[in-house]
Length: 192
Picture 1 (tube, rainbow, N blue to C red):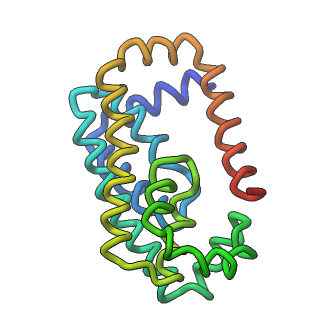
Picture 2: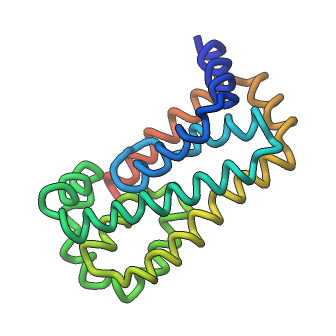
């Protein structure tokens, strides 16, 4: 079953609609969706390493645009949409304390969240809700998301064939690690 899913993902990564799918996932992940765009981006680059940097650029652009939607949710729809999203990630109770100090360190927080597995959507919503300067938010988002996606693209472009061989030989292990990291990320976000 895992092999079939992997083969399907690789074949979809080669489809002519793959970039649009990546753009959509990158966009919604930045404001509400829990699955990171890496789930699509990595197989796309493995399937077509020559397009690695185009794929990273699409993920970056769509993620920053989705971040602007998250910012708007925090700014204009915090009570109806933003607070429920933050509560889903277990961060709603910390909002008042966090908001008091956020703008002092906001650019660094956006950079940190944009590069790490921390849910970027939490920071996009918090940035809007606390009124972080929009230009600061946009610049920090471009730097952070670009850094994250272009580093992954560069590594896969450079070392793609050995990585693909490693993944294909240890597919069950890779799937188990991915699921464990995904669940661990949700647990960490909920309790940290």
